[in-house]
Length: 378
Ligand code: ZN
Ligand code: ZN
Ligand code: ZN
Image 1 (cartoon, protein in one colour):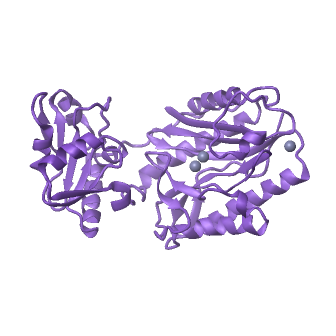
Image 2 (cartoon, helix red, strand yellow):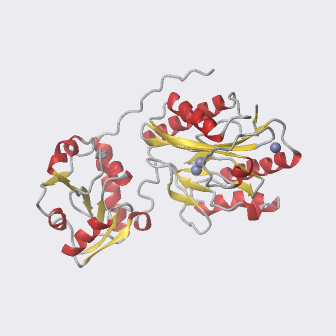
Image 3 (cartoon, protein in one colour):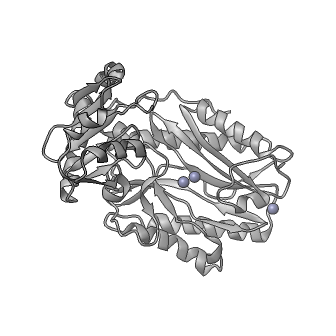
């Protein structure tokens, strides 16, 4: 059994880190013709201030980052002490409001006529509250208006993503030693979750165990099906460590595979490698999808590869940039995303292989390092 290594805690982000991120965000907003950003609790607010309210309630918390001005956060008075302690709050003006007063009026005073990028997950009641005060101000969803807000990771973010990937890899190495045949998908999934936590994850977000025909449904999580000798099993798992995500997939086989199973697995492995080889600064995201897809199409399985090849990862496990046909965004050093081609044969089995990759000046670097050959389990 591999013992977990003592994880070296990455250095905390500083007030200066957060201030630099807000400056960069304001510049991007200006370049996009926006008046600024409006954020409610969630990953974007965490990214720009380090603030994550313990409970997200109907009480308005809203950060306004204007182009060419000071960032200000409107918070309920009872949460003011928490907001003041956020690591990035130092240079953020705080405006508190009490129950019985109108927080939208307080926020409206911080906004100009114009268009703002608004958190994707802002509650409709908050948006409607602002609109009642400011009919001339308009909003665009953050992912539409500023999709690359969090896409380029700095060195310390990549350090966190690397650590999360290494823990997921350690969990995979261990799971190969557990019994598959005769146990349910849920039992194996629970083993995976325990391993992720043991190797340092603070949170497990998903443990997909897709055995036999269940592996042919990319959205299957896990269920009561008892795994049998002869099954292909898709294992896709991840969560958060030091606040950053892991997400890796390997497809294993219980006992000896058939020639067809091996052939399909090798096509997906080669597709994954082709996608990886297409990673370089300046390449449009869609070229990564195309490179992987070309291998699967050439092998005759094109119609069974039914999803985009990858998604960005960071504070969340699915975020821009997306590696998908039609995405012309160019890759930049520091971007981190999955490359996860698959072949799904309905009613039979599925194969997916997924690594997280970061863009470097000369190409790509994998943050998952386990073998992409098919592992045989018992
Ligand atoms: Zn089989
Ligand atoms: Zn995954
Ligand atoms: Zn993924």
